[in-house]
Image (cartoon, rainbow, N blue to C red; front, top):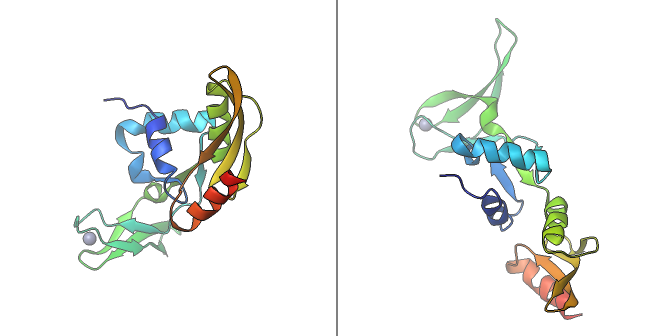
Length: 161
Ligand SMILES: [Zn+2]
């Protein structure tokens, strides 16, 4: 079943940083990954250096080791699993993509019929989107993400000023 590609994007915004791992975008989701990339809503970032062993299904997460093949000179990635020993993995398994929050917020403002330029108010957590029409008036609109623990006080304080 095809899901709305914005659903996983919005759900990722509650992670800090808002990343998709290769295993998150495998299978049917590859098409929405490419669509989100073309819209600029996600971008590829540096690959992770950790992976889960896919051989034993025990959930062993290990730092990837890079070894050079003496014969070919090529570099290969291995996962040193305590159950399976060294397991070769594809570098594609380490790829990651981050949600481009400013681009997402610009598009949310457009979709809401608003105007203005999203401005970060609390770093990484709260943005003033601009003004949006609401019940016959233009009103200030804000977007908050990860309103947990340390950021909640800053978000609340900024909204109360
Ligand atoms: Zn294993």
